[in-house]
Image (cartoon, rainbow, N blue to C red):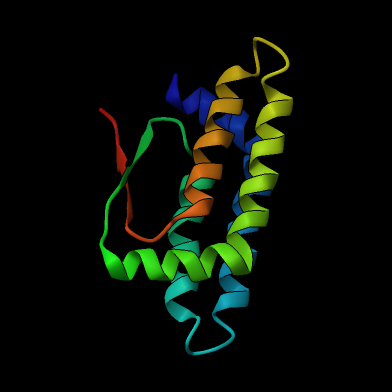
Length: 122
């Protein structure tokens, strides 16, 4: 079921969401200071392409908090709003609710990606 969900996800919005993370990663990697941000974007692009069967554990400390604040003001807010709005559109129909929930998961991740770990649910 995860495979079917991920295939449909990729076709109906996952590609756009994943490309948003990749574009952000490329823009962050232009400068040397932004490389850690860019690498984090690339890590979460894989989640954004295939989110079914994966969960996010949030953690981290003071350094993660400070980096997340910088992230939020520079590019996190627009990614979160975009994913949230697409999730709301998907939740209009009953069939789209699983896709909307995945967009909400990625919107939450867009607000604070540092200190978050993606793991596969068995």
